[in-house]
Image: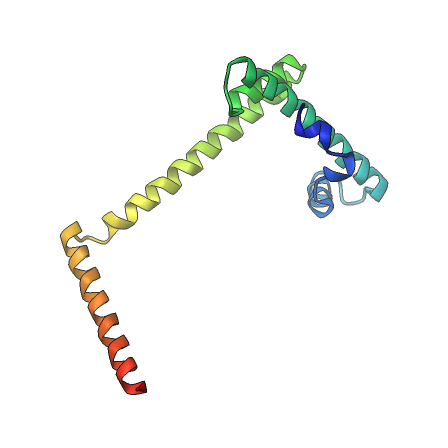
Length: 144
């Protein structure tokens, strides 16, 4: 029925170096984190992601949605008993939205920061195209 059922557990994993880095930032420096423990943690994380994804998908399908939205993940966490994760996830979602908004503002700001009207920019563009054509024609004439 789902992609999860057709994949073996070997097909799903997380980057070991990334997991090791995350763990190293969390645990005290004098504490050792063995490879076996790291691998077990990775398996748990993959299982957790699968569990949340499956529940989120079921919720989205129940609402006749084809895309899993953050609200579906939050509802899945609630239904599965992971309510403690909901508030931190809402904070991350809000931060992400703000970052996305800033990215869109920068794109608009570039045009405005030029200090030129659209007509001036089009004239400048045509001028630059003309210079490029002229340079190309000169180089083309010199080589023949």
